[in-house]
Image 1 (tube, one colour):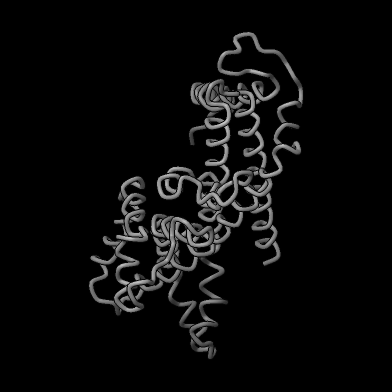
Image 2 (tube, helix red, strand yellow):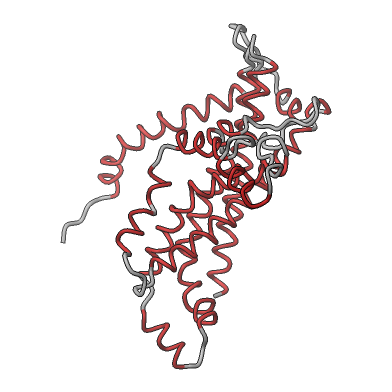
Length: 305
């Protein structure tokens, strides 16, 4: 049996570790360093300012930041819940051998996932158009010519619109993950539960679902981080609006859209790189904390089980 010393393994891994450190850790370290300075677009000689930038984001002038973070977290929770529900329902359907044409439906599942999000977002924006959008046009056939949902101008419906688009784009990922996990569940377990008198819901809750959690948990964490940082889809559809007040962010002005409008709107003539870096560090801390807590809860549940 071939034995290799740990020092030799480290030597082989050293180029990869150095590459990771240069590509990943260097930008992170530089961003952290910038957050403690007053660097701007035209400030060639910048100085160390301590926690000034951090206090700026939590100052009285930026009380809307907490509103934006809360609105973003609500968006994440709603989207993730729908990802799970739609993805689980679709996976259970595609795992049922009684359904005809399963290869076709499994291939069709990839269409929303494979289509570029920019194209999908613009198509949905047209569908949501109040005057000419097919959704309202179809609604007027049944509800009358004066009916119509103000998708782009009402805060509630704008929020619903971006949730719908994000679910359309993201549920295939959960379907694929859950479908793969379903196919790895031994059929003998379900048959044994059936012999014991368990109905379909009891078999799913007590046998199937616990075996799906190891696959669902990392997918949920990954999608939560991605949804929290959502920018392109929402910006193409609503641009963060609708804005109902001049001193309040838009109804869909989530974290990334807010910082984009804040920096490139208020400070477009002299971009404050240090403030952007500070905001990036704060978001990193929030996402890291949520990820750590989620993983800790998942590990504690597994240990209890």
